[in-house]
Image 1 (cartoon, rainbow, N blue to C red):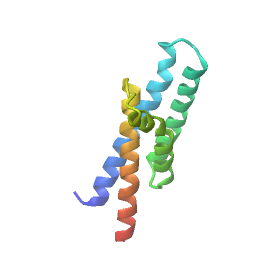
Image 2 (cartoon, helix red, strand yellow):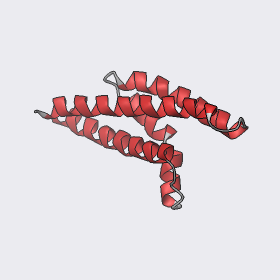
Image 3 (cartoon, helix red, strand yellow):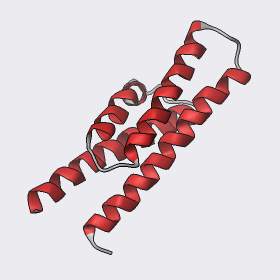
Length: 111
């Protein structure tokens, strides 16, 4: 498998992660009490679903946006307060997005 095919596969996996995270964030409204924090998390889920559509394409903007949306999870890791499945998925999406951004830059330099 060449680098471009591997990049596309990893980008597809990242898009699937963003879809899963967005759906879980929205679905979390049914199990928690309605509060401004839960509504904010659901709104972030909607944004993640929209970003996942962009991750199915070829441009790097969606990678940067997904990394920015998942920055709170990176902050929680820094303060060692990372708990829960959604926070861990956000951290995984953050790492994948930053890794793909670096990979895309490397591939563009090779061309």
